[in-house]
Length: 234
Image (cartoon, rainbow, N blue to C red; front, side, top):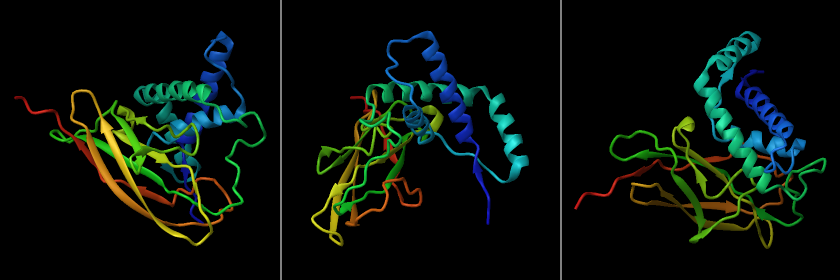
């Protein structure tokens, strides 16, 4: 069996735990909880927004871990995302965040379960990735609910993630399993100094009774790259 490992996981988890401990020690009033589930949600938020780094074997793990520790830019980018995730999770905790399992409970009904959606935003002239763009996922013109607080909608793009964004929409209850339905989505992107861009697409799904609500990374859709242009001077 091939054994690979994403070394960013340990790097992010260590950063999240360190920052939570520091903020808790300072007694910051904005931190409403630092339980294990809130820390996990924060780490998930960060890992969904950075590129993974895979290695094979223990030697590669050790070497690349040291490289990460010495890369100041990566450390700054990860810490920035950690702090942002901490604020988001603290303000939008799961109702069961302090229970033994904060995973969204399974429904007894059949559901339409959506794939993760990923995409990138670029400058239409320079083709450079755009950061600080606001991306909103809509279904039939309405902003949709996400699986949990670690997948905000709207979300922002960051320099450290090369203009990437991602969504994981919450399931929609179906009348029965085996139903076929097409869902009409749109992604709207806005950024100061640029014209708004919208991209529409359709996802066909079949309802099912899920055994789990955990993320299946193999079930993902890459949305067409979106390019923003600055308004033409009159």
